[in-house]
Image (cartoon, rainbow over all chains, first blue to last red; front, side):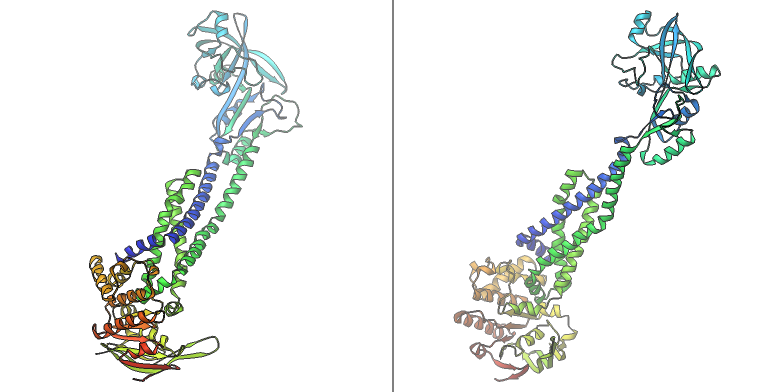
Length: 390
Length: 223
């Protein structure tokens, strides 16, 4: 109890030295928290970079100059749709049809994402014979939601990779299950706005029923995990996709991929480089509290040599003197932990676990420096100090 | 009663160029209830001898016995805490403690409760002839004489039977010098302590019951 009281009294009475000590501690701990906050922040950025900088891929022809009006073989479509490395795959297929000799344009899609502005819905994952139509289509044909329409549907056949032949597919009756909002952009890409929207699976089933191979005419997707980009590329290569070759012959076969990964690779590369440098420098950064703990404690305790010598001459053991000085510093360090945590919290919102870990590391390192300074102090000649001023 | 016995005590230390023999074969027995003065020129080994008697260092040769026990086998921190007190020419009080807190320090160190330590400290300060207004003052605010009295009160509070004083009046004027010497004499004669004063002041030495002289490390009794 005596020693605790002495320590608290010393902190109070040596107020300028205590203040100086605390300021040094706050500055170093603040720096340490900013440093680790930055490190954690970079780590988080690396983990969330796939969301912030998504890698988009577009299926094109071999030359890479066409992204729609292609023939993307069903085998490739299914490879993309079932890949765990891919997210948000979008496939469409346009065709024409006739209702009572009147031509209508049709578009099948596997997701509402094919149409910018459309609200999320499950319509496009259906396999039922249902459709969405535009308001003008309803008006022109004097129809309403819930009515049925019978469409004489056509499909495009690819000849010699570059020619298209329009052939009848089937005559299908669809139920009108809704109207597309006016603000939805139906003319995605360079296509004309369709009159009727269909679920891709429904159309695919019609192809199968007519013993025809299904083809989508445009496709795109994003990488589910950009950090596993090489894995995705390998999988797509196995699925039959090739890299774009600008010298390739004119073709409508959708067999190539343009992966827009340059921004991601540059950003991720920079982040990873910075993160690695900061992580490798961390042990060196820890030297800072050790050195400053040593230097500031050495300067402060050196100015208290006389006090140390008096304590020793009054019979206080060397170990108790060291413990007293250490405890004094320890309390000041603990008090510094609160303001020292603020920069990290305010700038990087670092979590309590990181703050506690930093505080523990800082305490340990700083006190190690203080301990070294006290060991040097304890080797002074008491007689020399006490007779020096005589 | 004999309390401190020097038996053929020598102390030497090594400098860069030579070995210095600061104390040579000193033998003497100090008893309680008496005041001793050790005189001698500067560098004669007086302060070295005092630090040996204070247990701040051990002799290179010979033995120092405290109540019949060899100091080398004693816990010297405990010895300074309970048996021997030292006062210095430069007073060496804790500058950030008040006069009373300085005197309370050895009492609390010995485990005396704070309230009781405070009461005893006031008694010792009163005994040292210090007015009450001094109790709450910090050493830098006091005169040299007042500081030395606080140092003596602190030594009294330590409760030991040996008081070692290294030039206790060296920084004081004649009037304060006399007061301090009286206090030290009272400490020896009334409180039954062995007071050993290192001084080169013949007037202070003349007040002692026995005078010893250090010359080139050799200790001799001259009175």
